[in-house]
Image (cartoon, rainbow, N blue to C red; front, side, top):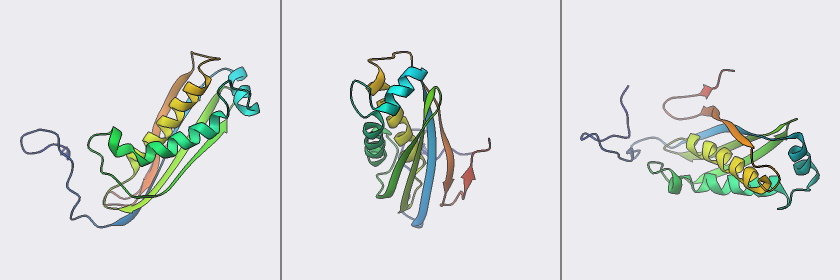
Length: 156
């Protein structure tokens, strides 16, 4: 398999998508922030010292998806048509799910992964005053569709 982000000299480059068709593309990613039951309860009840943890994490995830090209050097700036972040409060974790869509020449996997990551980091930041040993895990692509490589779904 050839690495597409290297030029003929073996140096990094941004892939040329000029001749690719514009198609509908979407991706979903997820992650988890593991924490104590007490911290989950603070999030659930709105008692975290910095305020509404999930509202701030949701906005952070959306903003991160929109700015992925500024964080990941070889990503193309994309005109996203939808970004959604959802949360599931588990017994000792918060599960994050991001969904990103666009019509473009390249996929939105990195945007979905960046959204989930930024939301997880924001949850950590919002709750670190009450628990510093939280762990961010399981950042992964769950599914994607569109483009030349077709559909992908993570096998569990």
